[in-house]
Length: 161
Image 1 (cartoon, one colour):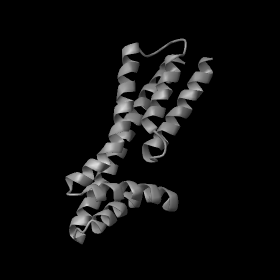
Image 2: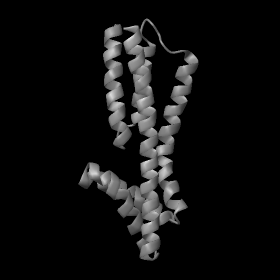
Image 3: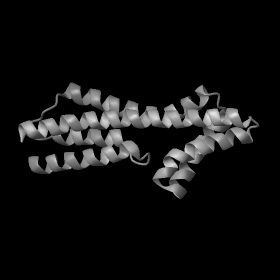
Image 4: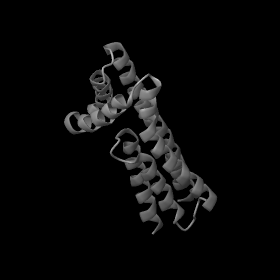
């Protein structure tokens, strides 16, 4: 059973790392599930407290990832129309442009939302840039979490198996 749980942990880690970049996959949650799979192995490398803290971090980072682009848009002077444009742009970007849409969609959506709201082009571009920075910040947070979880998974697989 430990071999199965170890393989499962590695698979979940890899999917979690992909999810740290692709917004349709909750990377931190899946990376955390890799830790959970090792938690149930016979050598049980993690304490209950460790698991609780990591669960809270995974949930918190996943929530922040959804909030940070909105905050970035608002911080750079964006309105509700810019925020909604950013969200709609992300969805359309993913559907029609694939991975590149993840970067382009929120920016274009925020700019278009601001332009529809009557803002000048330079202010609309500033809000779009805020949306992009927010997305980038969320992605970096998810990557750090997933790599950190990966560190714990790899170290425990190396030393305990």
